Image (cartoon, rainbow, N blue to C red):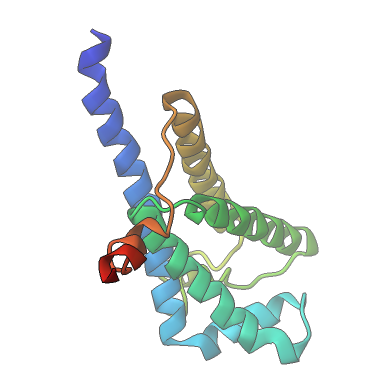
Length: 167
């Protein structure tokens, strides 16, 4: 019976992984398309100096895209980047709620339908907690199944030329 569950378990693992990757790719790409609007949202929190707003906006958006693509390819380190970003996002949203800020979270860029519908941070915090549960599931699954993601250099070793081929 345990053998029958393995394909279903693997399918569920990949489904969670692909869903998380899609969320981060969508989020990162929409913010990269309009970094100025995302910078305005970051500045509304008042956590960093104004001179850092645009570099941070581009860096966060780029990291989301890179980590999302890495999660699709199951590259080592991409889940760790997503985990760090989720912890950062949860901390910032918690700070915003604590301070009583009534601003858009900035999670999916300027065209975020959630921002128009709710315009609050609590919904974004709950969503991030659910996404964090998905991240924890992936870590747990990898640990108990002894699955190790691919190393990034694996994708480049096929294209490198060995020294012995020229002898």
